Length: 347
Image (cartoon, rainbow, N blue to C red; front, side, top):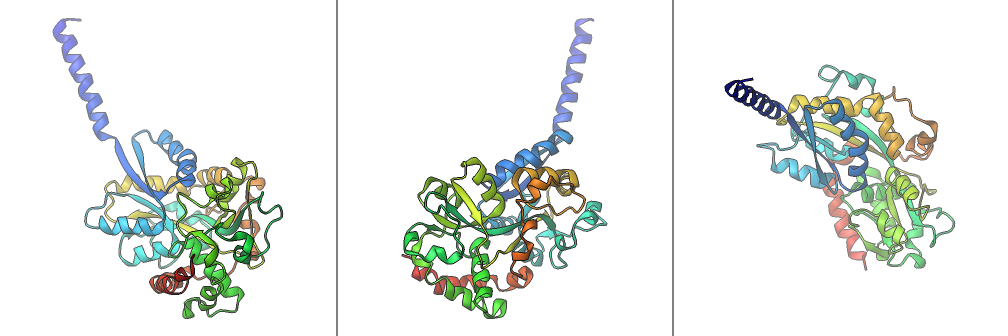
């Protein structure tokens, strides 16, 4: 090969590599930090990138849904996020504000495979995971599982309780469960009886803002009892050698739904839709459920029975009915009640 021919070939190859790099797409997925990020990356994002080598996924972690919607609002004029995973009540607020593009069978056929309760008429996205609230505890402090959320009000729990407070959905779910147990008025009365039931618990709370999550301080013994999500609790129970365990007390549990949404005006909308379809597929749902114990939303997912036994699907008879769409409409008022009636009781 002549020097001139070699130089021409080298330049051509360099141009092709450069063009290939330029054509690669990058999408940004905003979702929860901590354990969710680690395991969602392993079970969903990494396999998606392997199956779609032309698409890179950047993960934008946030501590909760309230922080996510704050970011989306700030970027509304020029979105920097393509896909978001957040709680259904906050997703409803974002849908009302036009932050998402509607997903349905027409623009995403996999939606037809989802359970009916994975779709909400007033929410632009669809459910990607199901979970539930649990009472979590340190097994050194509690050799036997506590039977009531009011165990957090006992003298033995003084200064040892960790609860993500309202507007976090964990604190909100606790208030709603206690409201139902005490014959409260529900959403129309801003969960008055639930707020009242928090009075003996609040003085024992070590923090309303566990960072990064409630599970680590309970495993370490810095705290001994609190509330959290079943999926994370199951994984933490395994990794801690049983130092942390979870239970559903007599008052019951709350069903929690995470929605996956396509951001309106997403920079890479088509690539983002590919990712969402992949995340909702039966194969991916199976892999994530068996990795982190979130219940699947795809009815065709064939899950290992041992994994299903550790999800909310085995506790549906203990679920307290909550209309999360109605809750979304009074979310700010509930937060105001919490700040007025519960926070001042904290030590």
